[in-house]
Length: 194
Length: 96
Image 1 (cartoon, one colour):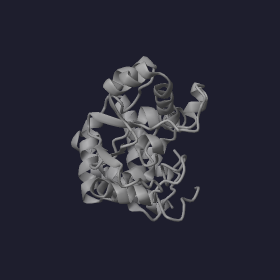
Image 2 (image 1 turned 120 degrees about the vertical axis):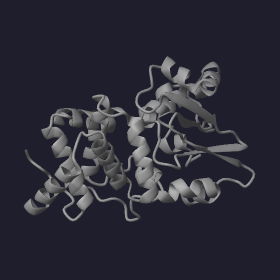
Image 3 (image 1 turned 30 degrees about the horizontal axis):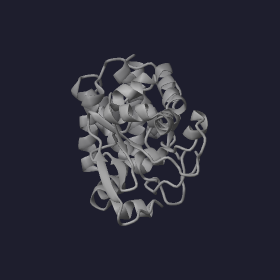
């Protein structure tokens, strides 16, 4: 068995590698399965899935209403879903309201729709500050909101995953789903962009 | 490895597509955890409880929290032994 120790001076990294190696040796986990899982998460899951939901909501009012009323059902009706999105709640940005999503306790995130969360989403700074001072945090992230826009912060829990329905860009006149989806970024769907 | 941007992993996002994992061991332990869940050996929700507890102790060492939370759960379930992990980690360190 080969071991690619990539972080020699970090005892926790060595311990994680040791744990993995013991689990493999005992047949509790198959190394090929580990590779397949990683490949799936890194290559199959990503914001493009969530963007399809948003693009359709921008062009199809009935779907938009369905998505806001029953996020899980609307998502499943498009054949989307996957890990960590058993119960999806979609929150809509308007001229008066901006929504932003966090997980204050750990890193809950709709993997099936957005892929794996970026490092900053899991950072103590983001998790602790976005609840307390969302306007300042968003401003630092390059998302400066007018004072009269209300900010709503949604804290993900064991059961619920939130997704922001951003406002449709004013400069887009296409109804092509692919073209619309290309305008929907991960940050828009987390709510750290507008 | 690709370098993270100068402001570090907790930096605000400026574009999509930034790195999720800083080191391969982090992606390995993540995928190992998910493979254990898929195989029915552990429940993700049980793991998540340990992850939350570890994060509360070490708020900004996410992957360390992840790894420790997984090890705690596996030890508790009798699926591995902490001394075995210590011993193997020591051997890995000596080989480096």
